[in-house]
Image (tube, rainbow, N blue to C red; front, side):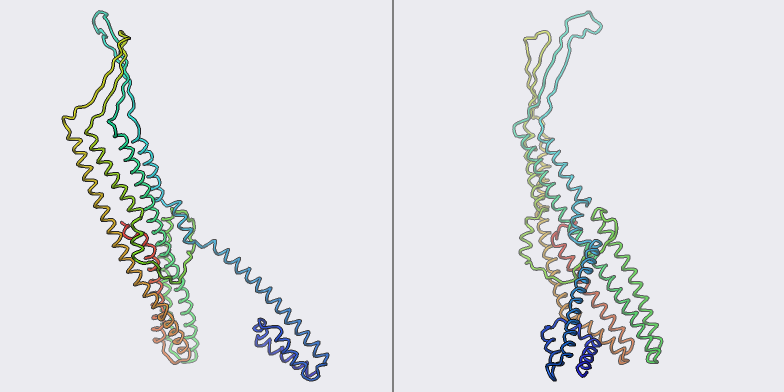
Length: 469
């Protein structure tokens, strides 16, 4: 009976303190040795103790199997819930993919390429041939006399090199449209990233406000308990209620801001999103691991600069076309008369370059446009370098602030708030001290969120720094 009592006491203690569940991960062998030593101390031949030991062993084994089955079922439920929840989450990759398919600016730039394909085809065409039909000797109001019908075929032959220059001009125009399309894609995708992160910022601020609302509600309950105990005045409850109302007002404003930012993101995605969804934001700070020299070096091959280079080449060809216009074209005609059928005619026409104001004006215009594009290209390159440098320095400044937040400020503000809550519950600090610490913690975390999302926005913008209008 002594063994029975000792085992029942052991089981009772184990289950009362939940130690059976906490020690299931330990070696079963150690537990078996422990029970054997506890039960079989007296004789080693106590059959009843052995039966009890085996029964406990069976129970613990069953509990272990049940625990594993329950853990597996719980994991499956969590996985199923996560998969179900992912359907309502808009990832950044999905947003970028939708923008590439449906953003109006990208679609317009794509159609510009198709338009230049048509322009290139027109510029490479030959002048159309002409057919003339004429009759001489109508004898109007006179006696019938001799009349003649002439039939001619005419073709304009351009001065050698003009058509080739037009083809080259059209090809450079197509290249300009292509690189402008690539630049527009980069610009729009950067805008989508920034809009996405702005939605994420409003979303995280709103979540934080909700958590603060729960904190204030718990603080009101604590203040009510202390008021009923006669430890604090009723004014503390009123102040907390006022603070809660102010927070609810800020929640309404945050919800409005979230709606506006979501509408801006949806517009960039071409209105493809029919319902509002959450965005997936990683609140972990990741330092920017690239140097300024590397970014500036890569900027030299940006699509926007490539487009300007092609514009410069196009203006060079335009100047050559204007210079070539000083040389006349030729019109060749083949004539067939009706009366003298064996007397085929041949005619060549051209213009005399006596007055060249129009041609010289076209040359001056093309030359000025070429200079304009050279200046614009140089300025654009300087603008990009200056924008990259400014944004890079801003990123480094934000990263220093974020490191300070994560290393010290956030933890200190959180610990201070927990300490203030504990001391207030014990009556060791007053309500005003608690509110001051609460507001300090709140402003610290909101400042951290703002800095973190400024870092996200700066990283999104550096890809197109200096290119925004």
